Image 1 (tube, rainbow, N blue to C red):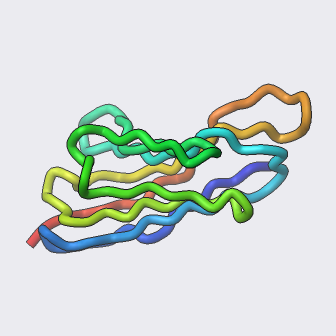
Image 2 (cartoon, rainbow, N blue to C red):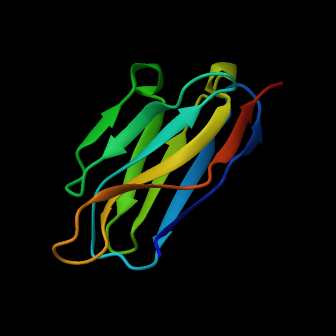
Length: 121
């Protein structure tokens, strides 16, 4: 079984910083893209940032220059450094990974359980 577990969410004041981490475990042969998504209350889940195995990154416009995604391929982890947080960043943040569980298996998306980030004074 593959599991993705997020950590690092919490309450922070506007302008503050948080670092989210996601650890992948279980039967993993390879991981291609990894990423972070958010879902605000009453809204659909949307992209925050993605990173390829080769460390190419892609960011949603609202977080460019404020958030940084990184990964450790040896540890199967992905982090999201969030700076200058704004109230609009308040949401549940989900880790995502495109995983092949054994050689020749089809890739599929796996999701973490989510971690709450609240930006408020």
